[in-house]
Length: 207
Ligand code: AMP
Image (cartoon, rainbow, N blue to C red; front, top):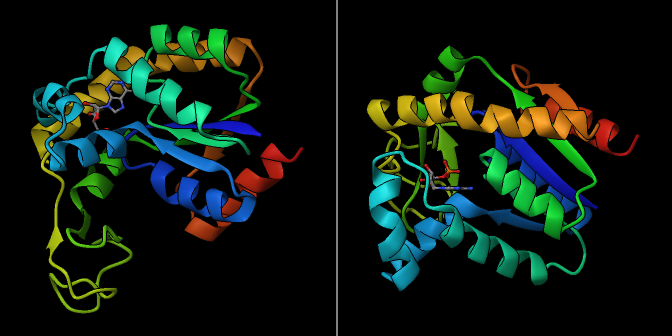
């Protein structure tokens, strides 16, 4: 199956995508992560994307299409898209070129989204994710997994988050309307626990 996880920042797309990938063996394609890896490795792509990302702005479509097409072509056993598409143009590009079976919409209020993103941190060595609200590391600032340093993403500051949420309402909601017209959307309330959300997603995509 080819699935899209769509939702406001902090709605848990990454967490659920990782769990679904583990269950079904699909490829997890997350555009934000691909950009962050390229920025860390100082590649050409990373250099092009860096200034947009740090300001909370969208990277130009032409750059995003290249990385998404490349990743999808390497996915032989289905994929989960997380972070793409984010606007109507990207949605049209995707549906013209690739088959999508379901779009899972993770629903959360803006207030809760800001609260969760501000509490989001990860290990700068092994990448393990934590949330200071509900999945803190055992020792403050130190990764449970590898003893690495716990850090916050540079674009997880209040100004950039508010800008990303505004972009979500302005641009990504048009993509959601388009998918809804095509009857691809299933809605999930994400104010519950991680495992409950996962079960609900599984039930709805297997329907
Ligand atoms: P995320 O980790 O999904 O919040 O993405 C981090 C940043 O990467 C975003 O704020 C954008 O600057 C950029 N980005 C990720 N996915 C896309 C996309 N589909 N289109 C444009 N920019 C993107």
